Image (tube, rainbow, N blue to C red):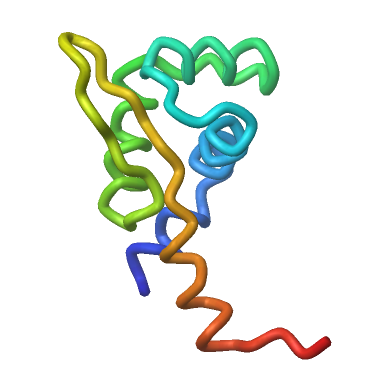
Length: 90
């Protein structure tokens, strides 16, 4: 659970998750481009790659390789553990 909260606390990582919500299955290049254009973030590819590694460690991002390309996918499963721990009353 602590890896999940560590991943969610950073605004850049939340922006990455937002972008994967808008368009799942992006490459690092696509994510960097969208973060620059839509969010004005000028982070390096290496920095975004490190953010993706934290998100992957938390289980929020999965990857798949196709040739030399690595595609990143959003996995909302770990967020369910938060809802199960603190249920939302209707």
